[in-house]
Length: 155
Image 1 (cartoon, rainbow, N blue to C red):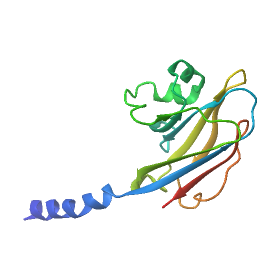
Image 2: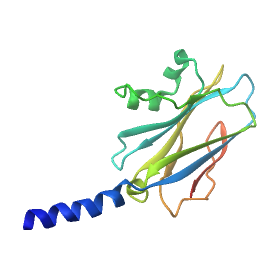
Image 3: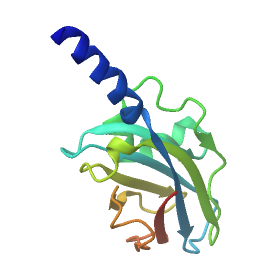
């Protein structure tokens, strides 16, 4: 009977754990000179370990080494680019990415990071580091070099 009760409790709990929330990430770039910038937007856990890649702007893999923190942390993730790449981001433009994240990740110590690299300019690893939290949602964050503002919106 105890085993049956545990199994029923698990069946009720699993759908709750599987719920996800739509998250929109808005990155407004400054006006650097040169061609478009490459960006890696990724998630780290509470210990700073790589969790997953959310988006990579820029399709030429030879430039990914310049997204240094993301490249180093995600190197072991063979699926890091599956279906999550797009064109490089233009100066002064807004890059909006919408993804689904498990509710269990929100307010659990995870962090969204953004690495940026632009041609003929210094690289900017972890230019943005924003907690994935309800309190942080909707609050714009300024970058240090290439990013004018970055905002996480939870739906």
